Length: 95
Image 1 (cartoon, rainbow, N blue to C red):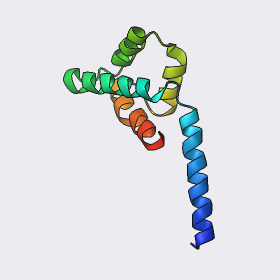
Image 2: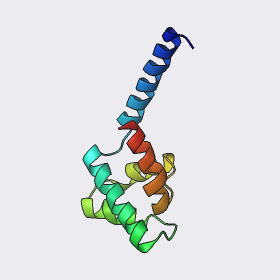
Image 3: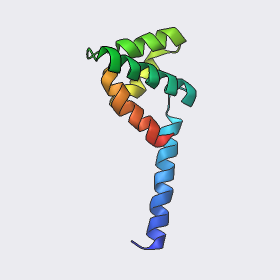
């Protein structure tokens, strides 16, 4: 791969990261709080294959549930342990 191809790849990756970031349903600070809450719950209580901890955080912070859940599911977060692993990883890689 020559330097022009590397530059094109780097520009494409930057555009992809920005598009992913633009799709975040909440600001970074809120997502950090959500993932910390859910991760703590999974570590201490395990995962019951629901979004119980995620829903508790959403209710406590009075945010719209549907956009958050849709984004989490789009990024592999169908239950709390997947939120803590898959969706958080996507956020970490693109923020």
